[in-house]
Amino acid sequence: MASDIFIGGGGPEYGTQQHLSLRYANRHGLIAGATGTGKTVTLQILAEGFSSAGVPVFLSDVKGDLSGLAKAGSDTHKLHGPFTERAATIGFADFIYEAFPVTFWDLFGDQGHPVRTTVSEMGPLLLSRLLDLSEAQEGILNIAFRLADEDGLPLLDLKDLQSLLVWIGQNAKDLSLRYGNVSSASIGAIQRRLLVLENQGGTGLFGEPALALADLMRTTADGKGQINILAADKLMAAPGLYATFLLWLLSELFEELPEVGDPDKPKLVFFFDEAHLLFDDAPKALVDKVEQVARLIRSKGVGVYFVTQNPADVPEDILGQLGNRVQHALRAFTAKDRKQLRMAAETYRENPAFDTEAAIREVGVGEAVTSMLQKKGVPGVVERTLIRPPSSQLGPLTKAERAGVMAASDMAGKYDDPVDRKSAYEILKARADQAAVAAADAEEKAEEDTAQAREFNAARRFSGSRVPRSTARRTTRQPKTLGGAVANAVIKELSGTTGRRLVRGILGGLFKGR
Image (cartoon, rainbow, N blue to C red; front, side, top):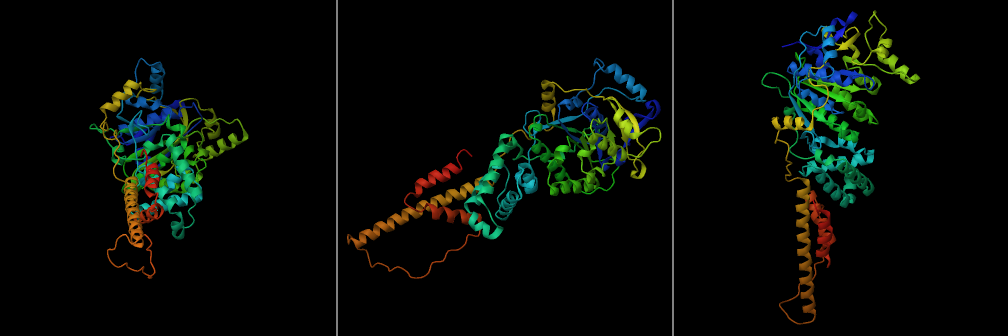
């Protein structure tokens, strides 16, 4: 089994082979460069290299081009000649066309197997980021999660969270005494954000069966790592959903995987394309969390590679942890661009053979300035590198070819059909129904007592002495659970003569169509 991944040729005439050591591949990396400079092909050849070395890969396909990893390249392709010439130039004697094991995933379930998680697994911090909530609104969301935990209400999908927020709004006065101000305006704002998320297609993200991380870390019978491709072309229309999902996935890997120290090769490599979306307008708490995960997840055997147009898109504290770098051309049209170009060049270990800043500005398509970690994790001297040609197809699969890969996948049928088990929505609905029945019974009993009193006063019948009204003070216990509070609130509001009609109207409307 290989101990490194061939990247391309550097040095004079591009004759010096450049490799990424698998031993240091979990120390993260960066692929950067302006649009059209070859970042996608670099991502493709790295995915091929990791797969060949038996390392599973997860990557997002923003433009749809990376689906070609599932099909071998062809000698009839228009670039076959340039590819073979480049392979000869850089000494890539083992260059052949071959396909790689691919599993397609899609949050919308159209171009891949559905990907789901639960509201509880997402957690209030990431969900607040996804919904772009204010500090006060995030506080109410934390209250909702706390109440769900205390009363055993599973939050699996959006309707679970929506129904719990309705209950919180109905009991805001009592909850404010314990948790602080719970305003109906903030609850309404959260509900509107949830509606926007539904309109963006986010409903399908939450539910069961939830994605099992083990299904992203598989190898084939011949030892190749599975390449998991997330269809992200449509997802990019909702960049907040895209960034939050990938950050959730990274956080789950961090939480669930055991410590492995410094393995000979990573257990999984994670490519985060369009990385700037993760950090744009992100609150400091979220950036701190990304930094923590990036710093510690390498000991879990996971390598994270950020793909972006400019290194300045990544915060410095995180950028400093990205040891393996492939820098394609940067354009310098403004003073700000020139400053960022100079800063990018200063992060590399200098090579006396050329000026790094000039090289970053001048490298052509398919060429890059590279620096890989060497023995003991020391950054290698920067090199101008001609990136090797891909072995898989350059460009996307057809719809029929994609469908064929999906049908033959081990994941076919496992996640296709959603499961809607009993959770917070069903539990709260049942409690509300019980409260409605209790309110109706209380109304009937009150009507009967009133009729008997009228008959007694009118002396129409006599069945015994009338019991005098007790003068003892009544006590009302505070409900200790959400169920008790639901019952008391509904009985109080619906025990009048129009109770049945209100029960049918309010509660029926609340859960209609769910």
